[in-house]
Length: 127
Ligand code: 5GP
Figure 1 (cartoon, rainbow, N blue to C red):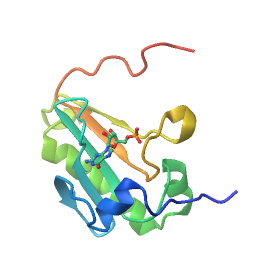
Figure 2 (figure 1 turned 180 degrees about the horizontal axis):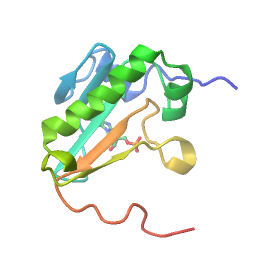
Figure 3 (figure 1 turned 90 degrees about the vertical axis):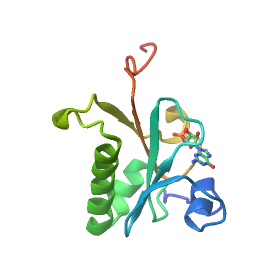
């Protein structure tokens, strides 16, 4: 089954400039902006500009240029936030929720970069 992309999702509208965002950085193929409901002192969303629904969609169908740009943008966001453990930062968490079980709210691929406090264990309960 093909991936169905909803061109009216909120991040598509941000990319078209129809609604504003608090932008951290923009590259040829990616955009990073602050989450409107931050879950930690640092909470940035990194999205590709292309119409990809989930991480697996992007991994399977994006071009090498889009992939390189997206991964680099994530690294640049971590650097900008000063959270890189290897560079004296205190660390961060990168999360991408997908589909129903992943409890994805916005159907446009985004990686959450969370940091600025100890984030606790990844999941609250097992099983
Ligand atoms: P998901 O649950 O899909 O992984 O996360 C979607 C995220 O998008 C949530 O953390 C939510 O706060 C954020 N979000 C939803 N609408 C907007 C918006 O209009 N602007 C920004 N900056 N973030 C949004």
